[in-house]
Length: 513
Image (cartoon, rainbow, N blue to C red; front, side, top):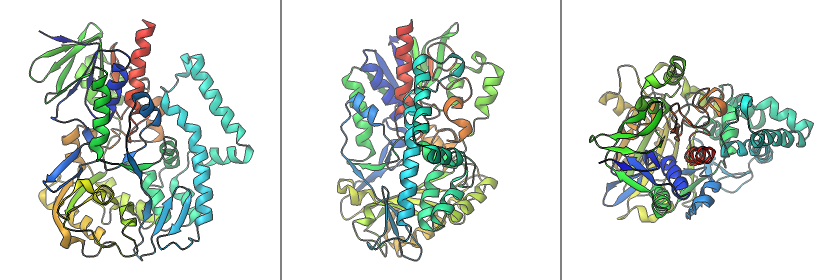
């Protein structure tokens, strides 16, 4: 006999759990269905040995919405991390808010220019922040409240004054490379900011609109913090919020199809043949896969074409290392080693690293970001072990002839060599290594193309056209069907807002009925 709920949520990643907790706390009977044995998706942790655990894919809590935390009563112990722009010459720079200095504490010659740029970008980003907390308005049928929000955006822009308004309009659709070179000159600081502008993207910092991507993410906070207890502490808090409000969490079995009665959702069928019944279903999977679960026959041909053409080519690999000790990083103190270490010598190097991936090749010198979470949170390791978590970009999803063992070995060697450029002797400390290319990430999490954001965070795939035109407000075709994952507005990172916003649309639809 089929179990009956008010809402079924497909996927127990952070967005699925955010949606479930929001709905359950509003009094809905919710069931979350997760095919894996544990929750988390890209934000899950893993144990490499009895002495070492850490984040498997996403390794920082980036932009978790404070609004969501307040609504769900989340209490997380987090530690902000300084960004260290590593220099091959050893003159590393520390980026902390709008402050810039050398790692040895001396004044950086670009400190004033950096502070001015950061303050300006933060002001501009604040204009965009309210857009992430609600569905993008459809102009032809926008409600009064949504129009008021847009009017406030225009008013705040005008209130900045002619000079600042003109500057905002000048740079908002320009490329990050030119902006950074003009303001800071090139070098590790510009390289670190350029890398942040295109993190996870299939584009380089010269791409038009890369400034908008940077502003859009800054508008959601732009902060990278480490959650004490690891990423599993974040997922655990979301699970607790949902479960304490009455939500049911089912692991170890996935959804193979969404069932419909006419043109309305009626439930789901699981991979063991059993069914669950509900008048509303939310999917935190990719947009195309979400369409496939309901069946393309329920969508017009143009919509199917657009969903199929959604750009979601992952370019980011993950390199996890278990070390027998703390690596040497000449020029950094022990405390600074616990920061976010960015290896992008210049904005030009970031652009150069992007070029090979366009042709299905691996960059000779990938752009990398590394953290040593066990230095921040000693509970992760024992016996003198340390964990190093490395994000590597640019790595193609489907290289020429596929990901053979030989190509994996070449990539691992390039990453190790790149790390040793800043951490001499690192290879002698490696006890265990795990390499996850975009293809692996797709297989592990279902993220389309292994893309960290389920779809490019580019100007033509944001706001009213995310994931595609006509589907930006979470409702996804058949009545009662919703998209609540990273391919929905406002996009990727670990904000939890796609799930939260989609859940609120379900509640609003219920009130309207």
